[in-house]
Length: 287
Length: 330
Image (cartoon, rainbow over the protein chains, first blue to last red):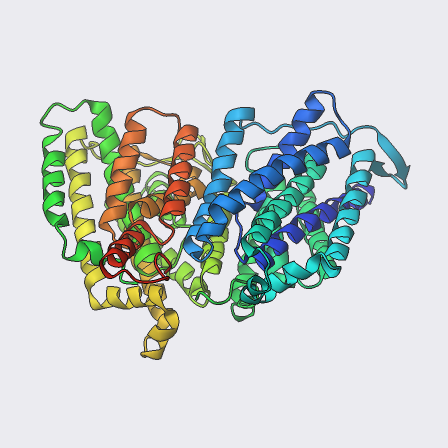
């Protein structure tokens, strides 16, 4: 019983960070109105930042989170401002270009750190309850993810979220009341990328760090965003935790590669079964 | 969007004829075996990229899982010849049929979807197939070697393998023939309807086109051609590996097509041939190659967001007419 209970607890812990990442993707879909396939690359970036910091003796999660967020924000703003914004209205360019960026990053990571899985020491157990071990990193990542997701939801419901909501609703009105729509778009893109990197930094100890590790969380967040829409942050949160559990349990019961296949099957089913329900989730007008 | 317009009445065939002449002459001019090999593979990659352009360019269904069809064919060839003991020609026919069936399946599933969701579904299907194939191991009938995964499965030809010269000319003939076929079909009524789909699905439907059926047929035709390239690859390389299904291979087709001008067929075919030969011939390691592809892609998309052919045409047009405002968009 206890190995499975351990997997369940870990699944909930990792699911919280996945929720954070999905929230970022939802923000991009809502405000920038593109399906961003480079989100997983920022996750990977965060994980490698955490690894490099740990390898150099800085093993506090908060340091990794801040560093990862800053680097990813810079790259995210660059990508959003000089690539995504200019090609926004061409779905082909967005889809293939954002995938291209992800592949570019994967290859760069492979050149820098090699194709072999790296890992971070999980640290000593914090406490053991009925045979289930709680680790420091897991608890911190869970609490941080919870806090950040909550903070994001609060922020979006407050006055700060108003411009974003307006742009999501109608960009022309937003522009006509004097908002710099393009600027808000690339800042949102940068912030969302930073959030993905934070999730990656927080989950780095729980995963094998490889150049392609970002693909699983990318598919997972795409499922979450497509299935739950972007209005209710808590909906999104529980769905992400559920999928995190699914992938952890399937990795435990079958084999690690099965969690990816299972998530891919879920997204295929979702797309095939609800083709009409997706129109609301995507950028509306162009097709 | 009438994407094939720029090359439709242009001077391209003349240039193409000159290019074909050069390619025919190269082996006679004493090209070394390595470059001959690179070019032969380049011809196959060009057909594969052209087949992507049928579905992703002409019909406008952005597929990010095109390697699925290629890999299905190479794997079918390898499994049928090495494990089941079929003669190669029979395996090749079966591989073509299987690839077409895979195209029909993907086309049926993705037909009701629009825009980025087609890309998403094909990406997910391709990745699922890759992941599945990566985990499969087979045991050879004699000796019990374990086959599959990254190591791959050998393709048994059972006949004298073609000499490098014959292979080169066969691949070149295959390229010319399939490019002609693709252009033919892209300019036929079928291709016109595909082009209409990529322009506006709604107006195609309004004029009575069975949209789902034509999308599926575009996928089937493209898959059959990608499968044909896969058969050629299996025969030439003599091995099918899980990499034949990889996301990088799917992405490579979209990249070459975007750089060459989506929807023009000749553009993607040429850019695939040139980029592949340049990067292979100069001996850049695979990781660096993919890096350069991605860079080339990002730059192309950034400066030609509506596709190379489309954006160039818009620029020419706006220079002629001095259209106010809307220049460059759609």
